[in-house]
Image 1 (cartoon, rainbow, N blue to C red):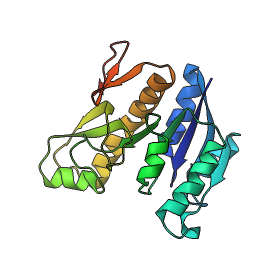
Image 2: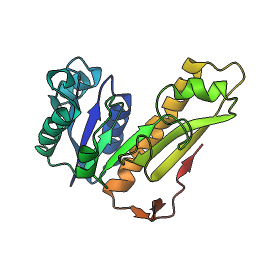
Image 3: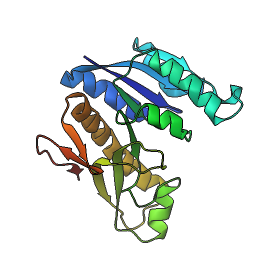
Image 4: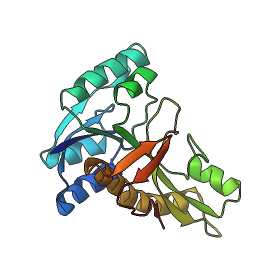
Length: 208
């Protein structure tokens, strides 16, 4: 049984999607813990109400990123994760932290990477006149919002879209995409070779 730990900073809607799909679909895994850098994160309360172990490592109590990351890794390792999922975790992680979890940490980003890495992805996509937007699940590497792409989901950018409407449409796809990628990982169905991820069953890595 694989153990999943999820990091978040807010309400954790992607965390909720993973927890629910893991239970309904009977993955060979369990969400062992949910960890946040914010004590008021809604996702922490949601997880605790469902009997999932939780922990808070408040970044405001540390002098620098490395000290925070060291304590965060210590707490995470106490839950013995096979897979670490970033689900709206709004902290830039140090290279040492990323290296510690290399090959077993995934992130979901609200754009079709490598386009629009970083913040304000939907605003930037609309401003550039993009006709498609979407979400990407990728393995985390030291370079922000890069790393081997596991799967992507595509949505149209509609006439009249604003940042909010496009964000909502993309988030719906994230809730499909992230659990799918996590399930592939825990079932051993992903292979990374030369920076490219292959789904070993031949399932499509693109959702629309």
